[in-house]
Image (cartoon, rainbow, N blue to C red; front, side):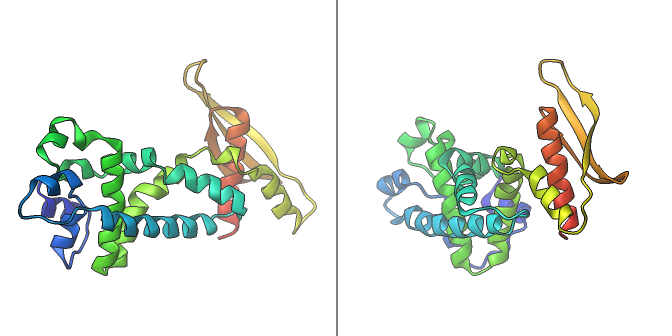
Length: 226
């Protein structure tokens, strides 16, 4: 797939195509080229700052509110090299890397560092291109879904937060019920609901009863605070 086709597939509207192309140029290609004189490292620098800001804003807006320590921990899980390389592969960025012959021969288009750098460079290029909607599209396609799969239940005690939230209005307590268990006995998935006065407030799944209850509490909180 050509780069323009990929950009159309991602629904990105570009003003300066050359700027976007630069996001995919590895230093090894510049070293071998007599025409191209700049790689993606400067764009990567910009993209890193953009990613830090977007991820910080996203975590700041989560409900229930995260502490500074919790936000720092979650951001470190979201924006490390391995995670960024995963995002890049999901978006097929590695298919468009422009590498020197030696780097390409040595599998550079599958190297985590190259893909992660290009992912950040792309964010930087999109930001400089002037259409912030493009930046949000890439962020929302990659980082946001990844956040939903993180071990956030180990960071947040949603059950306590839900109880505190409910008791701010009423003295009633919530109850939890496991409604199903699926999967093999050595790797089960539990589904729980959280209720108050027989009314279901939320539902969630997890690899243990505790995790499914935490997920149900999280679901309830997100609905209640809207």
